[in-house]
View 1 (cartoon, one colour):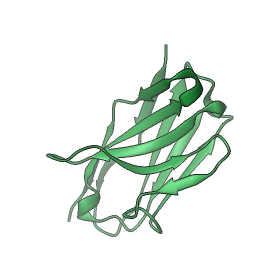
View 2: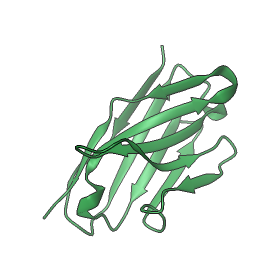
View 3: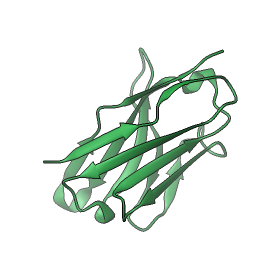
View 4: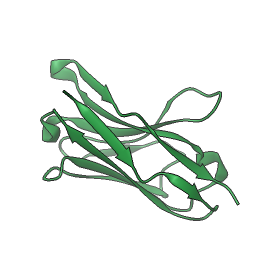
Length: 117
């Protein structure tokens, strides 16, 4: 059974930082592209950042320079370091595991990030 368990969300003031974690089980983690997506109220889910099995990364324009995605294959965990947070970063953040060759696309349950004074 595949599980993606996110943690690290919470309430933070503008300009603050948070580090999200997503621990995966039930998949061969090192072969998967891992990503972070977010969904704000009334908006569609959007890509924040992805990291491939080869450690290539890609970021949304809104995340570049502020967020960093990384992975630890030994711990089956992907991270999202978020700095200089803004109120518009408020959303539920979801972890995703994707591997096209086996048509696998898995999602976590989400973790709430709220940026407010």
